[in-house]
Amino acid sequence: MIIVVYRKTKNSKIHTMEVYPNEQTPDRINNANARKPMIPNSYIIEELGIGGADMIASYKSKYNIKNHKTIK
Image 1 (cartoon, rainbow, N blue to C red):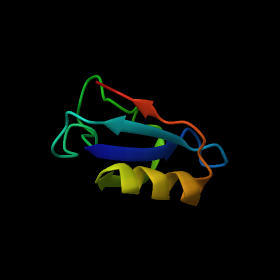
Image 2: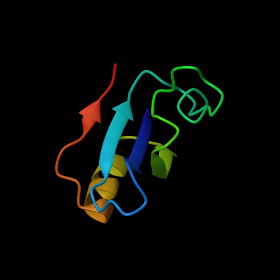
Image 3: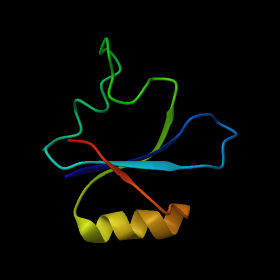
């Protein structure tokens, strides 16, 4: 399970979290050469991790995120 926390601009205070349960490695998410990237290249990735429910809870508390989106 890959967990990504990002924000849309440098000055943005709003963080977004997406969870990819079917991905094993972060290579497809962090690919800068993709034609249609999973997360646009202009977004700033704060955290990118491999983990489970405990990592989701820690990122939510660290970045004050209330809801996360699960991508299948």
